[in-house]
Amino acid sequence: MNASEERKSTKKVNQTKLEKKGRISFLKKLKKINRKRLLSQTVATSLILLVGIGAMAQMGLLPYIDKKTSKKYGWFRTELPQNVTNIWNPFANPPPNPTLQLPKEYIYAGDRLLAIEENGGSNQNNRTNHALATNGGTATSSSQFNSNFPPSAANNGDRKGTGYATPDGTWTDGTSGVFPDWLQVEFNGSKTIDEINVITIQNGYTNPIEPTETTTFTSYGITDYQVQYWDGSGWVTIESVTGNDKVWRKFTFTPITTTKIRVYITGAAYGLSNVVELEAWGS
Figure 1 (tube, rainbow, N blue to C red):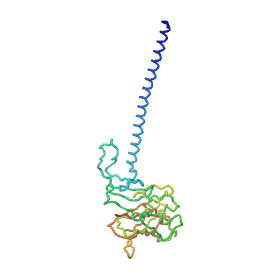
Figure 2 (spheres, one colour):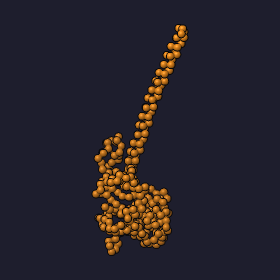
Figure 3 (tube, rainbow, N blue to C red):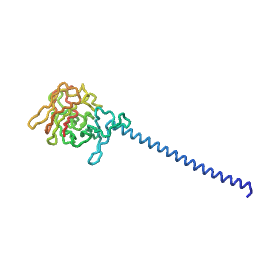
Figure 4 (spheres, rainbow, N blue to C red):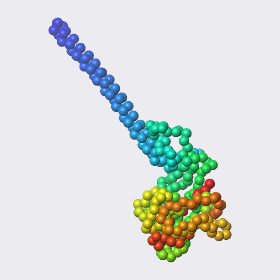
């Protein structure tokens, strides 16, 4: 091999080495870029999940997990103390109190309110809606408008009245303009209760909202009625209401033991008695 050919060969070898070195360097840079990109995506995804969970927690909406079986079967919504605006935000000022106990947890399956746990779920303060059908309550009434407005619609745990004119929506009596009407719920045996809730129909019944004790109606709700319990031989009135315009009325009283309750209706805005939910809460 002459000198010229040797120089060409050496140059080719050096070029091959440079190309190989360049490819290796490029691959290393690409891997580094991909690692950074993956890390950025992971951090971004984690932040999105954290913000999402924080938002759900701030709204008080998280999966409900049974403490004994660890089985998730619905959702719970928490009621924050009035003096606490944010216990989930780590950047809050002052910072969140991790030992703070929430006073109430509202346990739902879908839109159905199953139970309320107080003081962060302490077993000794658990409260149950004994009127609820899934807890053994049986609803009956003086009459019903038709099969789409049965009394069973008023003890299914839905305070909104979702699905108006279906068997799950609301109870409506069948004697327009004629009173009294009544809706009764019999428990699964004797129960001790200290609270009864009466929820009537909203103005926007086709697109109802979750009612509060300040939600009012003008069109279709019940206006005059008595809240009663059975003492074993007759009906005892807990409270009488006249001129009502509240969708949801809560009645609290000294604990009583009874087998059934009822709402005895003597007036309604539209001439028809409409009850979305009748609840009886106790231990």
